[in-house]
Length: 269
Image (cartoon, rainbow, N blue to C red; front, side, top):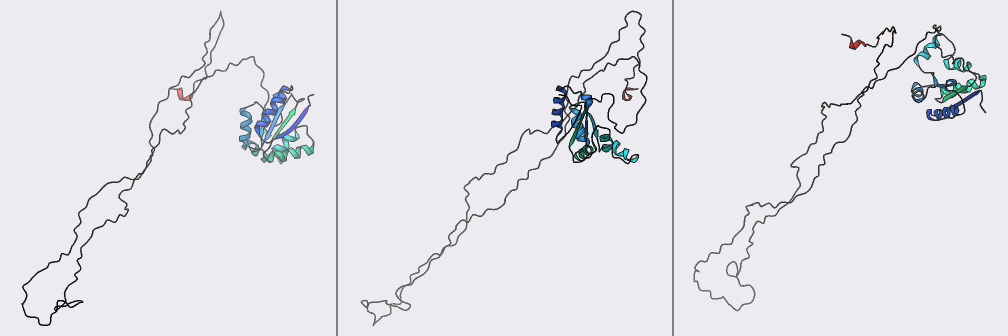
């Protein structure tokens, strides 16, 4: 059963649009549906996917209307709907909090809700038909893609290296000389222990030499600096665009006057 008046609120544009699809299946006309939102970007999202009549409280034209009226536009819009005062206050708060308000009036086909726009007199009707011509225009968009990458790996290599190092070494030089051949009357070869002749029987002489050894220490011998720079180059894109043209053919004695007002300023010579 269809209701004359429906008033509902939604958190997301998608939910509101899905609800309008269901209402149209139930027999409601889209021209009887009105949407109140706070932000213009939300209104644009609804307009992109429907032909609903959307009123925005934060649009510059709406704010300007406050100069000539003590009422807020949203209050004036809600008062023009068939709602109770309690409903008007509640839905105004819902819209101010960012929710979307959907109003459907199935019995209101003769006019739209007052949107604070000046009313103009209706021009006298003339017999005319409009044929829209379309053409395709090329819009270039760019996106960043990865075309490659540079990988720098560090690894350890081993090499054998020889180095000559001068070292010092002590050598013992023994010099033998002819003795004095003096007679030693008290000398006994069989006497035990250390026999001394002047300084003694033997000498202990330390023989010293230098030994070379290798100490390895890591040192910084090279630094790798990687820089990335951006270059710009021209790329040519080719696309086939289609455009609708008209051809006027006079049949019989038809008197046809063509008024071409499609020349843009940038095409004038």
